Image 1 (cartoon, rainbow, N blue to C red):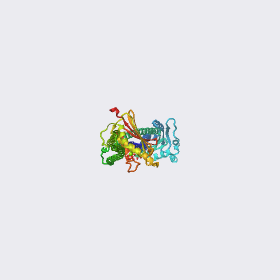
Image 2: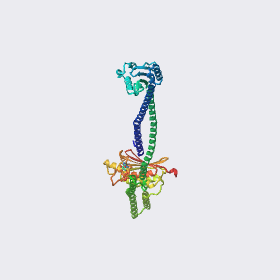
Image 3: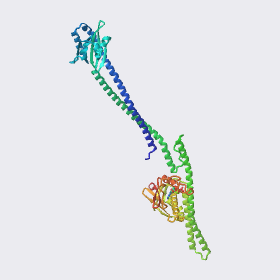
Image 4: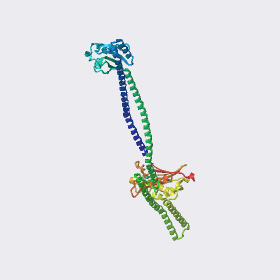
Length: 521
Ligand SMILES: Nc1ncnc2c1ncn2[C@@H]1O[C@H](COP(=O)(O)OP(=O)(O)OP(=O)(O)O)[C@@H](O)[C@H]1O
Ligand SMILES: [Mg+2]
């Protein structure tokens, strides 16, 4: 698949952008997501810590307060007052049980929330603190009694707080509260869920921002890329256009741009090459004229011979007795006709060799006749048969008569060379016996078709692509410059026509298609 430079550069820009956006996407997925979840986790932990701390502080405050108001009932052993305070404390939200011990660790009051019984450890406490100090709550009670400070710990889903009841500097006992952490745990879980939702939402939000930014980068990058690519491709297109113009013979056109970089160097070198090509084209033109000179010499030789013979005959008849004036007259007429033919031939040669004038409507048949008249006898001498089939009607095309004649001379000389070469390859006689060149013209409503066909073996499939290239030749350096077809192509293109080739009937057929100029007459 052939891709233009512009398409290739554009694809490169798209790939680079896709790589950048893809890289950003991966970074976004791995980095951003973990950043968000880390920060939400940290927030959730901070909040849950704060919640637990607050819960503990409230419970400790309550226990401290209860311990203070229990001083009096405990010191006076007023069981009823103690129970009243316990029930009041149990009414607090989250309270599971409240137990009051005396200084020896005996239960002097206690109850559970709802129908819950007083915990077993509290009931067993009467056995004495020392023995039971290994149990968790009992150790806590002992610690509160010995230090005189509030002691608390988390036990599963419960928070156990023991506050010493201190009356006139002597510990009277303790009050232990068991509060449930279930509500706080539920709050923390709810908050965790909320933070997860926040994380998901912010991830979604930033994903959308990311997609927006990615689309913007792609659109802006693509825009800039396309402009850059167009700027990069433009000089190449200009150079391509310039070279096509050179190909059609516009050698004097200046290079398309002046730059100080490598492209500028290339354009200058192409300009120089165009000037060299111009010189070579002039040389080639001289070579055509050389070719013609040989043809003309052949063409003039025959009428000259006829003239000399006729003149000799008249001279002889005048010397002999009874000269016949009719005979002399017929010979003189022949001399006059032959001289006229020679004049015509010389005029045609002048037409072909003349410097170019402007482009006008010309009869394409005249150019064919010019070319044929200059080469026919020579081909005949070489044993090549020539068939010419021209229409009766005028075939007007826009161009220069001598240029079109040059095209046909190139094609006929190529056909002749091919036929001679084929004869040589067959190892036959030096002349091309059996060689044939057909020149046929046809007028169609829109165009004039001229075909030059031969039976010289045709063009090899590996050469067909290259034969129109300047300087491509399979002939010896002294015989061919390789410019004939490329110059012919340039002339035909300049006339708005086409020049093509095919192999047919044991040889090559070159077809010139020219737009008709009759309509514009
Ligand atoms: N009728 C043909 N049959 C076979 N090959 C041909 C024919 N016409 C052209 N070619 C091939 O195309 C090549 C290029 O032709 P072109 O007329 O451009 O250059 P040339 O004839 O080699 O040289 P120049 O025309 O400058 O004297 C020839 O060398 C020949 O190989
Ligand atoms: Mg040629």
